[in-house]
Image 1 (cartoon, helix red, strand yellow):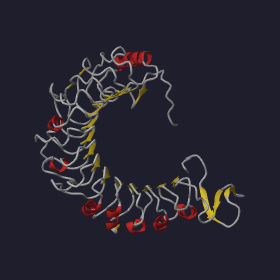
Image 2: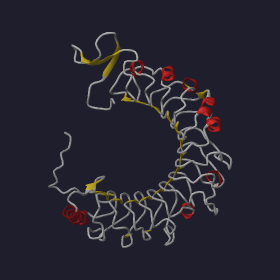
Image 3: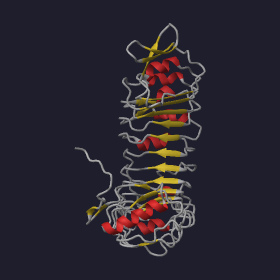
Image 4: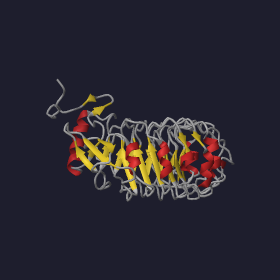
Length: 405
């Protein structure tokens, strides 16, 4: 595993001489090996700032290899034809390696392959998709952040046992009731920034998803008001930055198993007492940042550990019904003038807090920050708590701030 970010880069050299890691006269490091000499290595992982030429390294590996992970833009283009020799691979990950093309034909004999990850490359097409028909094991396929033009064709060849699918950053387009109907076992579906749209929740009914990410798509016209049970089993939902104006309706179709909910960048406005009734028993992580929130009177959320209501128009807070398990709280960029009910007796587990860019007076801040330092001596303050909207910089004169000359 070449993952030590502080070490020097290693250059691989195939040689008939003595094998091992050698330091050259100019202080560089070389790994000397022979073709197929690393016959017992089952798992090889490297990042681009650690090893220069993974293709040479792969020449030294054998068909015993089961896991291959390469991450980053290496100094040479990785020769994917070498994958043909690794017929026992179960896990292939080539992340951000700047592949120009990828031909699945080099893996036609890889019967045990269950994880394929090719995110962050320059792929516009994956060739010989019919090879996917040979894979019987549950597939984890991550082709995110490419420029793929044949996503619908990829879906046709994936095994129906696929459980984890990430299509983010490609063009997926309009979803309908038949788009994912083959994938009865799907548990995780990531469609972030993929030009996705849909009329209703029917595309998500064939399976019982644990995680769904449909963030950064234009879903302004999507109908979330149906009686569909499609999202009832979700544990994680990200619907951030989707221009949804009826975001409260989205919350209503969720179920008690939900643990994490991200609503950032949509329209929420004023919360109603029943908004979180369906999910209040299990919810741990709630992001309502930049949702035009004006009222933060949140219903009883007994298990909440992280709450983000930053970048809103909140003027007052009522923490009496918020979980005392809260460890992370983001209140920055609101219109708060006081948070007197933020005390350690109610939030004994608080570890992270952001109160910057509100409307606290400098006098109030001085007292409140002194209280924070006393009650939570190890509290991590994000942002600059002394920076406020109208008071500007409230840093005390005695604060030890060193500025660049």
